[in-house]
Amino acid sequence: MTNSGERDGAPRPTALVTGGNKGLGKEVSRRLAARGMSVLLTARDEERGRAAAAELAAEGGDIRFARLDVTEEKSVRSVAELVGASFGRLDILVNNAGVNGVVRGERRTLDEMSVEMLRSTLETNFVGAFALTQALLPALRTAGGRVVNVTSALATFARTTGSGPAGRADLIAYCASKVALNMTSVLLADQLREWGVTVCAVSPGYVATDMNNFAGTKTVQEGARTIVHFATLAPDELPDRAFLTEDGVAPW
Ligand SMILES: NC(=O)c1ccc[n+]([C@@H]2O[C@H](COP(=O)([O-])OP(=O)(O)OC[C@H]3O[C@@H](n4cnc5c(N)ncnc54)[C@H](OP(=O)(O)O)[C@@H]3O)[C@@H](O)[C@H]2O)c1
Image (tube, rainbow, N blue to C red; front, side):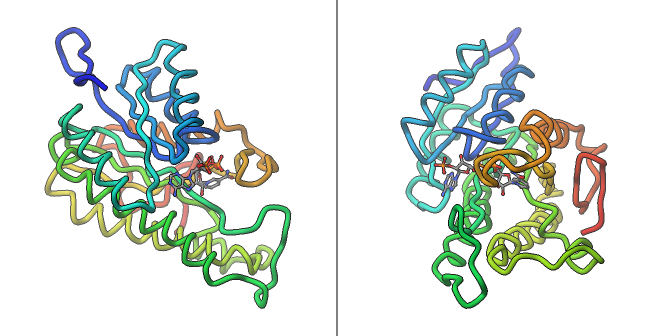
């Protein structure tokens, strides 16, 4: 990877997307690059990550690849060092990597749920996003950057305690991990305001991806559009401490 690209003498804005090899992360990377940003597409699987980055780079964007498993401390540290050395700043961090904490094709009851799965889901969706954000703080502060945490409507108390159907037992891990991410988004926004860094939690809607066996009702293009909208909104236009959706602010 070479030094940050320049456009008309000014450095390009820079973005890092986690879980960029497929689904929403790949489409968000595509859209940020199409807006003229230098995008570091990261993924835990080197081969699939490189293939996605090469495919998007062939479309003309400035897309580079770095391996990143958000649950591995060493991997997080090495990507943060890479960003510092190569870009020196980070304008947008999209914490998109996530797992749904269920076994594909199986619907487990409360008794059958594995505590290990609970741990690993929290580790990826919550701890991983926090650890990466923390490691990237110097670059985010330099840029007055934006952190976008990709969350879910399943993790809102408004929906869960509303009149809808009861949630699935085996989605407890997923919902709890995203609730933790939601609260972290608000607390980090408060902590980082003085540095000019803005933080938000964005729900892309129910999107057809691998995560739900392509059962979602929205396309990745629609979901990614919502994420990129809030990733690139001017700081003074970004709703503060809000749960953000395609339709704007929704109850937590
Ligand atoms: N689809 C929806 O309806 C929906 C709704 C609300 C929120 N979301 C959120 O949107 C985000 C993207 O999900 P998606 O729907 O695009 O699903 P997806 O296609 O399954 O993509 C998930 C991505 O996360 C990556 N990932 C998982 N664990 C990781 C780790 N430890 N380190 C780095 N990357 C890791 C996956 O990599 P591998 O390919 O290596 O597994 C994959 O690239 C998730 O946070 C999800 O919770 C999705």
